[in-house]
Image 1 (cartoon, helix red, strand yellow):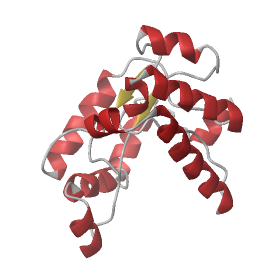
Image 2 (image 1 turned 180 degrees about the vertical axis):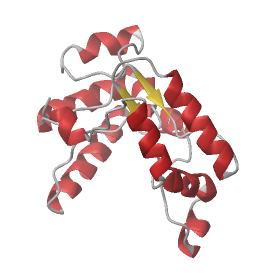
Image 3 (image 1 turned 120 degrees about the vertical axis):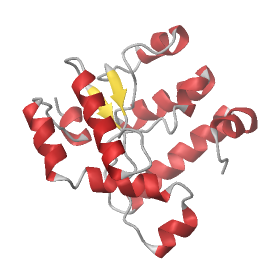
Length: 174
């Protein structure tokens, strides 16, 4: 398990990437889950065409949508045509800031700047527990994300901006 993209890019083969994604999909299925999508995890899958090739191969084999922006780079764009998927017009993060109010203001600013389209909002929410504090160095940022998306003011503001929130299941069936 590499801690960053560079370790994966220099230390993994496309066959290892394929085997790892298959193992995760198969484990989810064994647990009785139906995977909703394949994740690019930190965009790593899109950084090498041979990785992306395995990613879309699995998407086709399992009939699972995968993450893809409308404009990636040429080699990836060409390959994505072989396994069609609804592509994002952009990505939004939960904002930046070391305290709740700053992070909330940053998120609202990002939401206001969105143009009409299909966006992915990426969050990694956690509850504040002693275990989380020990295993995730950036636990506070993730805890603030949890608080943001439990905040009725944020949800009401999204409604005011007419931002429709959908799940991967809804995307898959539209």
